[in-house]
Length: 198
Image (cartoon, rainbow, N blue to C red; front, side, top):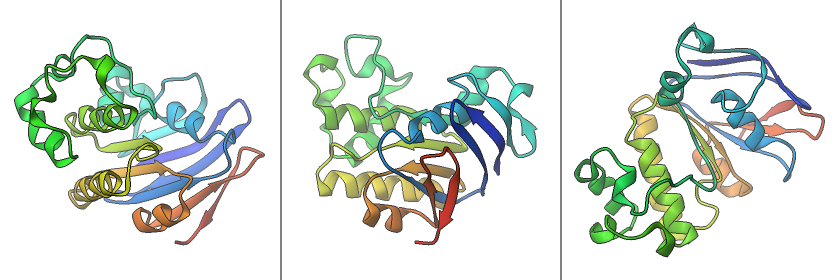
C-alpha cells in the first residue's frame, strides 16, 4: 500500500492511501497540480510530508530504488539515445508488450525523431512497465491516442492491477476515469483533494 500523508509542494497539501491492486483516477482542471502531485510522490521534485510504500519511508531507500518501485510515467517521456530499442535493457523482452499496444515489432531500430506523440506515449509506458513497479503514476497516458490504442493501454494496465500493482491515473476524460478508477480523486484549485465515487 502507498500512503501519502501531508504531502506539500507549492500550493499542494494532500493525504490519501492507494491500496494494492487499486486504480485511483485523478481529475481536476488544467494547472491545478496533478502532474506536480505525481512528480512529488515519485520524489522527482522537492516536497514535504510522508510517503510510504508498505510502511517503509521513501527516505529509507535510495531514490533510484524508490523510482523503480513507484514509477512516474510522464505525459512526454524523456529520450536519451537515438533509437527506440536503446531505451530498453532487453528489447526482446519488451517486444510482446510493444506489439500489444499496437506498435510494429520492427520499430526497435527506429529513430526517436520519427515517432509520433502517440507512439512516444506508448513506448514510454512500456519502458515503465518493464520495471514491474509496485505503483504506477500515469500522467495522461492516453491523451494523444485514438480509441483503439487508448483501449489497449487501459487493458494492459488493468492486467497489471489484477496482478497487484497500484495505479494513480490522471485524466481529463470523465468517462475514462469511471472506467479505470475504483475511486476518483478530484484536485481542487486550493491544492487539496476530495473523493468522488465513479
